[in-house]
Image 1 (cartoon, rainbow, N blue to C red):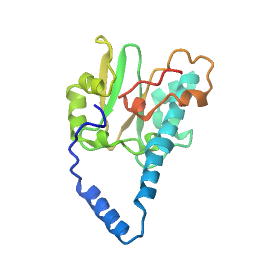
Image 2: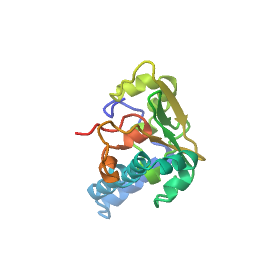
Image 3: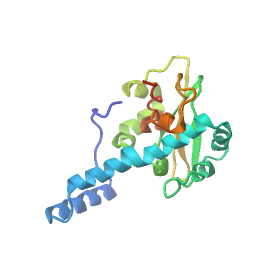
Length: 201
């Protein structure tokens, strides 16, 4: 599923109120839409996902931390200083040679903001929320991720009580890399399960 696909963009009541308020403030010259776009982009693609990428990189390099992350992701993530609203209860699910994990929220758009930043538009879209459960392999193919037929795909449905973080498999050829270098290979989409960690250049 690519970002270019048409989605049901009907706004929920809260989003509609936010849009209306933004329009009024813009018309009165009190806010600059371009500045808001920069702030949203920062949280969506830089700050939040960078937190999650650091969590993944630490799990790749520190077996004790990886074990802690499996047993109690909330506490393990909190130990790095990444805590707050929308991240109170998180479970880490680890990809393996046998299983690929994919996260969705079928009821709304529950999402671990503290480690992934703002949710992408497609994550909240009804087509993704319904089809990720019914046809996960087809949805992943639309994102450009074609998995071997014998690899199991496990779909995790987030709720207000529990959110998920996918720990992708560490790319081959990264032996001896630092956590900082490894974190650069981890994207937001890989931590949702719609992509793999990037291969080293």
